[in-house]
Image 1 (tube, rainbow, N blue to C red):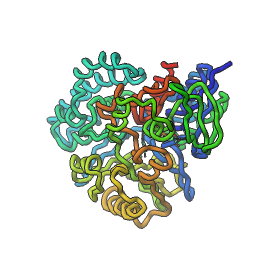
Image 2 (tube, protein in one colour):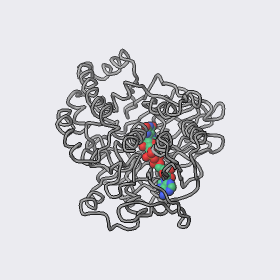
Image 3 (cartoon, rainbow, N blue to C red):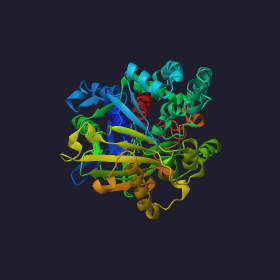
Image 4 (cartoon, protein in one colour):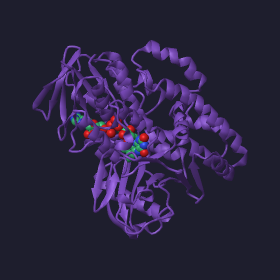
Length: 488
Ligand SMILES: Cc1cc2nc3c(=O)[nH]c(=O)nc-3n(C[C@H](O)[C@H](O)[C@H](O)COP(=O)(O)OP(=O)(O)OC[C@H]3O[C@@H](n4cnc5c(N)ncnc54)[C@H](O)[C@@H]3O)c2cc1C
């Protein structure tokens, strides 16, 4: 008889894990507390506008293709994923713009527009990030880091790749122009880290984008979730929605099953958590008797990613000149990030990411209208900010800022809106302190030092998703399911 595996949570990590285990012959049940799948990639609909809740930039789409190939199927029969020509438009507070894409000639032009003497450095930076990518992504992103010996073996090559430097400091070795430094160092923010403290290993994202490009799935990222759900149904994976796992049952050093909504018990051979590890270890496992001193210290010392304020809105007119992906930099960078990550206070001088899917796909908004979301990094809930009080004020600040900069007149043109704060991430998505991306991607919280894919405490308890190796972002969480594959 097939062994029974239960997957808790249906983020991309959980969906990929379910499919990979099913392909290996396990009987798989996935349990999601919400009535819909996707986790951070859930879809919201309001007033005929469709909003992807979270991920919008699809990189390394082959990782989705692999999940369909497991069952001799093709992703293109389920969802249309297309490459974008313009990846991001960076807009600075003085109005200067940098168009970032995969075309070498255009990149040369853009870099030289800011500083011709930095072009050589830019090329050297790209070559160096290729080396980091080869080691950090191709070689290590899908390997289990469950034992210290394996970690120690990697240290010499990681040191050679200058992993002790921060992303900003590595980029600054090659580039002197401050605006270009921002453009090429902002990537850790996409996975919850401060460029000034995230290990330079994460510059691999720069090369990952270059290698595979930036993609969009027609109908929004939610259409990938739908495609995976369809595949799961076809492959007889049992999906239980609107059911919260309130306890993981344990017996000595093993887990034996789970409890749903404080009542129904389901026994199983393996539990795979896509629920955030700090939440699982703090709240879902009731007895802490098996946690040794070192593990307790590990839990205590973790630094969490920033929080996110996400404002979803539809406009009654189209903003044709606004790119699909815009990143706006406020006046300050280092000081602003320090306020978010260290001081944990709000600032008026905000930076943000603006998503306009209707630039590529009109199905996201009614004809003649645009659907948007703007994502603003803010402190996580360790800040004790009262979002019920501050939410509307902050929304107005964001609207004012967009009206003055990238979306003139937007205040008068919004016809539908709502927003999410770190409270949503904490309460609805069960992420400690409402962090947007689980724990930060620091060196001291990466690989062996992150929460292990096979639990440090219970042999038959596993983790996939942002809080385990290799980390947040779609390529990261899909890779975590590949690590799981190797462990089974
Ligand atoms: C606003 C935003 C924008 C982003 N943009 C991008 C992007 O453009 N590109 C990119 O690559 N990445 C992006 N990311 C990061 C990326 O979305 C995430 O890292 C990734 O989707 C997280 O997936 P996950 O597998 O960790 O699970 P999650 O998406 O975190 O899902 C976990 C699931 O577990 C469920 N759950 C938790 N506890 C329980 C329980 N006890 N019982 C039942 N269910 C439970 C939750 O309800 C949730 O559905 C973005 C993130 C956010 C928030």
